[in-house]
Image (cartoon, rainbow, N blue to C red):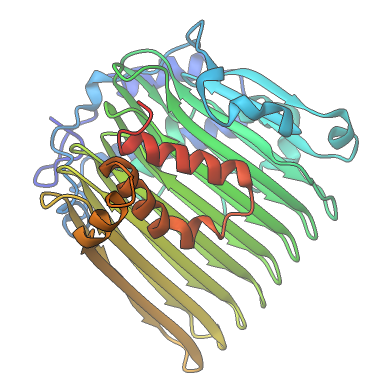
Amino acid sequence: MSTVTVNSAPSLPSGFTSDDFEVFLQSRVEPVWVTQRRRVAFELFQAKSAEELDPEEWKRIPARAFRPEKFSLTGKAAIGFDTAQLPLMQNRAEFEGAVVHVDGSATESRLTEQLAAKGVIFGDLATVLCQQADLLEPHFATKAVLPDTDRFAAWHGAFWTGGTVLFVPKGVQVDAPLYSLVALAQDGVADFSHTLVILEDGAEATLLEETASGSPDIAGLHVGAVELLVGKEARLRYVQLQNWNQKSWHFAHQCGRVEGNGSLQWTVGGLGSKLAHIHQDVHLDGRGAEAQVNGVTFAKDRQCLSYYTQQTHNAPDTRSDLLYKDVLTDESRVIWRGMIKVEPEAQKTDGYQRNDSLLLSPTSRCDAIPGLEIEADDVRCTHGATAGRVDVDQIFYAMCRGLTEHEAMHIIVQGFLQTVTDRIPVELVRETLDKAVEVKLGIGE
């Protein structure tokens, strides 16, 4: 029985039982404290798998077809995965470092000597945890994504495999972007990648992260986590382009924490997967902290993309700005549920969230649910959501000037998304999103 069936209390899926977990631990070479944390997470996974999922959350998510027993961990990466097919990897010369994981195993890890000499650490998480245990132990899964959140967070905490870590010391600025790839190349593989970014006070960096499938025909599972820890007066730009194929299931908990006068710009491109359900949280923990969250989703066929976002203001004079743009066609569905939460001590908060959806077919559907939870009395918090169809007069106008219907639709969609893409400072990312939109619309296939 599926572990995501809301109306029953299921057992653990095959491949992730107690015996499987012990075999998995024997295959790992890692510090004792990592193994101990895994055991705690597995106990939570057992307990939470015996409980029903939150019906309010999962009633909108069509996950009954999910069969976790069809997926398993693999001990090695597939040979011959062509990373050159990916748009961002074609521009690898622009990156000062790259980390590539295929089927949960690191296949590439590099960083320029200049950055390494400044104390920057960028590499495979499992390897760096062994080499820099004292540095990473206080931060790894202790501040942002906690295994007791729900069964998926616990599942990840017990079985995480590959992942990327970026550490930038105090006052160091990384000018050129760094790149991370998480890929699935074999059929039936479950990947539990973990991304950990730590910027000390006054540091600055840009990380571009991409997920991809080796072919459109393989089935995959990704249960991931992202932790972004931004110190005082530090600046982090993090971009994640989720582009799994339409036979992949994607579940993730992602969380950023920003200290005083720090800045986080977080851009999400939700393009792929059969079903994606992501919790994306931002915590503004110090006075003057700010976060800008940009989201672009494009769903087609019978895809379902679900984002639960929360902007939590824990300190005064903090600012958050979230803007999601959704494009839907065929029988696809997008679910967005946003919350701005203001704690009593977070006076002078300025919080904003907005979700706009463009429906390209009468059978697509968007559920947008904004919300506010305010416990301070001197704040400015606003939210909004819109949904609408493409104006046929606009398409007709463009076609009268020599454009095909596909080209006209592309111009309209591009204009709809531009308010988000204009906020992205990396031109390469803007170009990649635009090409992905063309593919979704059937242009250039």
